[in-house]
Every structure is written in C-alpha cells, then in structure tokens.
Amino acid sequence: MSSWIGIVVSALLIGIIQGNYLRRVAKLQDLIAASLILTAGLGLYLLLLFEAPIPTLTKLIDEMMEPLYMPIAKWLMKGSGNG
Amino acid sequence: MDKAKITSTQFAILMYMYILGTAAIVQPHTIAIIAGSDEWMTMLLSTFIQLGFGWLYMKLSLKYPDQTVVEYSQQILGKFAGWVMGLLYLIFFLILDAYILRTVSGFLGSVILFRTPLDVISLVYMIPVIYGVFLGLGVIGRATEILFPIAILVFVLSSIMLIPKIEVGNLLPIFPNGVLPSVKGLYPIIGFPTMDVIVVLMLVRFIVDKKKTRKYFYIASVAAPFTLVLISLFTISVLGVEETIRAPYVVYDLAKEIRIERIFERVEAVVGIIWMSTTFVKITLCYYAITITTLQLFKLTSYKFVIVPFLFVVLPMSKWVIDNPAELEYFLGYVYTIFAFFPCFLFPVLLLVLGSLRQRKKKNAAEGQGQEQVQEKEQQTKSPSAE
Image (cartoon, rainbow over the protein chains, first blue to last red):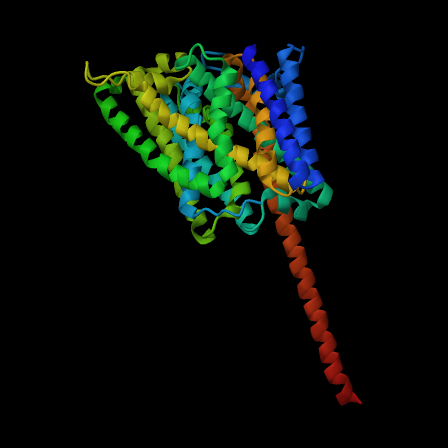
C-alpha cells in the first residue's frame, strides 16, 4: 500500500515540475498532452489503489475476443493435459 | 523527433534480443503444455513463420523508408482513418509494454525478490528504460551492442555446463502423437513473440544503411527462433516434460541445474541476467515506439516531454493487466494471438495492399497524362504541316 502512495506522490511532483518546465519552454500542445497522459495514469492508479470494481485488462480482452479465440482454444486443448 | 540513427547491424541485434525478450522465459512452459516433448519442433517451425512476418514488415517498411507506420497510414488511408490506425497502434504498444513489464516483474518477484512489492520492482526496472528512451535510439542500439556479447557468452557457457545433465531419453519418443501437437504449439508462438516484431514498422525509419537492413533482419529472424529451439531442447532433455509443464519460469529452473560441487553453485541469478537484458531491450523498444507514436499523432515538439508521463500509465497498467500468473498464462496461450492478429497482421497487410493499389493508380494516371501530353504534342506538330 505504501509503495502505491509513494508512486502517486512522485507522479504529482513530476506533474508539477514538468508542467512548470513545459509552460516556460514548450508549446501548449505538449503541456496538454503530457498533463492528459499523467492524469490518465494517475486516475488508473487511484482506481486500483481504492480497489474499484473494474475487471482486469486481460478479462476485458478475453470477453471481447472470446468468439474468435474460443474455437481455436478448444481445438488446442483437445488431446492436451488441459482438455 | 529523435535525430539519432542506428545501423543495420545494431537493428539486427536489437531485433534478436527483442524477439527473445520474455518469450524465452515464458514460452517453453506454455508450448510444452500443448506440444509436450516435441516443443523443439514447434520452435523450429516457428522460424519459417517468423521469416514470413519479417518479409511482410520489411516489405511495408522499405516501401516507405523515411516514415513510420503512423505517418504512412495517414498517407495511405487518409488523414482521419490513418490517425485512428495510429491511435490503435499506440494502444497496442501500451498494452504490450504493460504485459512485458508484468511478466518480468512477476518473474523477478517470484524467483529472486520474494518480499519486494511488484510496484517497486516495476518502478526500478523502468528507470533505466526511461533513461534509455530519453537518450534516444542510437544509445539504445549501442547499449544493446554491449549487452549482446555478454548475453551470448553467458548463454554459451551455461549451455556447455548443462551438457553433462542431458538425458536424450527425455526427448524420446519423437512425435508420439504425430506432428499435430507441434503444429498446434505454433499458435501461441505466432502471437508471442512472432507478431510482436511489428515494432520494426516504427524503427526502420531510423536506420542509416537501409540496403543491408533486410538481410540482417532476416538473419536475426532466424537466429532468435533457433535460440528458442536450443532452449527448448535443453529444458526438455535436462528437466523432462513434466517439470517443464509444471515450472512457470522453466529457463530459470534449468539454470539451477548448473552445479559443480562447492566450486560453482547458484548461478541461476547470473543466467537470469540474460533474460533481464533481453526483456530490457523489448520494454525499451516498445516504450520508444509509444513515445514516437504519441509525438507523431499529436504533433508534439519533442518525444521527450511524454516519456515520464507515460511511466505513470505503464506502471498501473502492468498492475491492471492481470490478477495472477495463471491468467497471464491463459492469455498468452490462447487469447493474445487473436488479439495481436489485427494490429500485427491484418493492418499491415491492408496498408501494403492499399498502398500498392494507390501507387499503381498514381502510376497509371501519370502514364495516362504522359500519353495525353505526347498526343497533344504530336497534334501540335502535325497541325502546322497540315496548314
């Protein structure tokens, strides 16, 4: 748990430092892109930190791809130890 | 954009390490479940498939040698559709990077650093990756030139020391259930690591001597699966099929067998360094592809501005991708190949076909225009004489 908080705090610090730097040096587009990426990452972190009921990415892809991969998986499992 | 360039040799070494990547740690176990003692045959067959995909990617990349897939997809499909395809590639590279990071941190966490939280392992692992990407592809290429001989030396030495432990009987009988299990075993290999080589579509643009690229890339495409053949031969002949199926990180268990009493023991951590270096190359190249794709999609000033922010996306994603190692095993074994089929096979084929049609159409139009001009000129020359 503590490692998560450390990572969240470091992300916020980096966001502030890089945001300041980009505001002075780079274009607005760079600042917006960097901020959005950081915010998306932090959002995902917080969801995981507070154990939000979201399925894992593997489960999401699994559900999406099930009609396509299931026949192949069944064919592969036939005759193997998993079948 | 990164101004650094790499040579074809560096590119080939990068690709060799990239293909081996985490596949050497995970795949011998996954393939053994399907192909049993004939998994070496599966690895051997995968060489041809690797070459086939290599041909496709080289054909497409060298058709547009000064552009990445993000750029020429916009040229071929039009601004909007091409941009969407670029975005899909960005998401794919992100997911791939997260899976690789999860695999390597899971590997380190379960065999070496038992009591260290996965987040800390992932973060520490990502620090050199971030630094490498920050320094650019040229530095990554040169670093790989240093890592490569070390990895090969450790691999050769450990292979020699395993020779006395080999039991040929473990490999026999060959094809007890026919060739079909070996063919079935190809399915997970096609996804991971064969189709992952899609990253070349982002890298060929940075190669200086493009004339040699194709040849060197094909050499790397044969050498990497051949190394996997050797690894699978060693795992089956030394540990046997049962142990290979049971152990999730079978290559590490294989290294534990290297033992010369009281003189040379516990070398598995040293052998583990090879796989950490190959995985480092894989994660770094994927991460580099992520930042370059973002730069080109969103027309940023420098790719360096998004390197650190993406760290805080890849880290939680590596945690989010799976709940437990069994889920990862199932995903790599059955789901990933179909998932990767779209960005790694269907899209490149689509781009290649549409690109060729477009070029042919342009060529025909140019020829048509040329003929019209010739006819006009002929008419102009004829008309004064008629007068």
